[in-house]
Length: 251
Length: 387
Image (cartoon, rainbow over all chains, first blue to last red; front, side):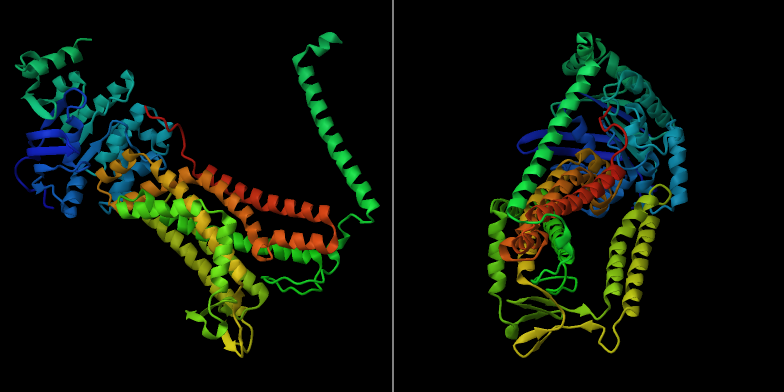
């Protein structure tokens, strides 16, 4: 895959359809994300936000439409899938660290095996990113010995160690206590300021307002509204969006 | 005094004393009654009989055995036979169980169906019936003259004849230990180099360890080789019977197959449970990092599943070791059968049963201790709850 030179959008989703059995989870989704763009996806639970971003690295298979990531079409071609997964990092709601490996090993595993990096290089990279997420001193600990916020920051470091061009965040702060949310969001804000292409499913509206180039509101498997944050929060036209915002921001 | 009795610590101590005292009294009474009964029947108790020769023979032994050998030697033969049957049975059961268990967790519907059918059938037929079934099948194999032959082995109704190296006893024992080391060394090396080495180098170190142990075994075999004989003793037909090689009697094969198939059906369920216990999230994380499905399996899914399986597996192994006592049903001279024969011939019932119980306790407690050590060593560190 020759993605670094390939022009155009980082992610292009055209007429995406996804079914779970007879349940129509995603309906004709169209979305284009430019390189360096920061997108926040929000919406009520069950609206298809997670399903959509999980389609981008094929943790879910789409049933219709086209997904193109960094110029490569995501289809049944295993080479394409592997190539795209190498360039797309993902952070999960429940961190999903490997509990039988140390923090450092978690970060070194994929670069050494997938990118065939020598050990010394992989370790240097891992330590650099652990420093960046502000937990270099935890490198030799196991995930189970860390707090939720620390684990999520390790998960971000683990994804970054592959030096991806796009980062997907699937509700990264939903399983965390309030004070830990801040430490994870800080890391994400830093990442955004450095120009990483990011697609974040989150309910952190403060983060959206501060960081996002565009906010996307989904409901019932459709993209209902798509707007820059100021416009989205102050003058959204859609009834469903306004209702959702009043619920999220009301408390 | 009454205030002393109301003290919680004093009360607890008195209760303990009463409890220990009554158990001791029970044991002493039992011993006294047994001694009196034995004296009335004119049986001398004690362990003197261990050094007397048995006067009977065993049908299968990995050690040299004649009717002139003493009882203690026969007990040793019995224990070794039990351990041999146990280890072969457990290994085969583990292989069968892993394959069937993986089939049951497979995404292939046919594999799942086959796996479930296997478990449903073999888990629900009593072990002793399965032993008899396989014994009947094996004893109906062809006679030595029309034996099935494969890789120098001969399969007949009289047993399976396998080629053995013409090597002296001590060298053979050493070589077996070297072979065990070839399996154990990589595991140990993998553990000690865990933090300091990357996965690729770790594998190389493990392979080097295994290769060194194998080379050691080869050297021991070459040195211990018996003079003027070919290196490997192949079984061959001589007259009406087969000569040479090692004869694995039908009793042993029937037991090993039955334990493998019956035990495999239980282990399959343990394997399935172990894989089900691995969170989907960890595998998705591994996939999202670009690891191939095979790497996800070997580096994430299998190591985590093993941790979930091991405690239950240890339990199953202890159970299967005890199941080797089925040997007496088809006449395989395992530890239990040797004890039964000893009781018949010497009348030393209490002593022999004492030795039997002590023997099985030792085997199974050692097995449990080994598994506990492994469990502790690989246990996941810290709190596995999220958040």
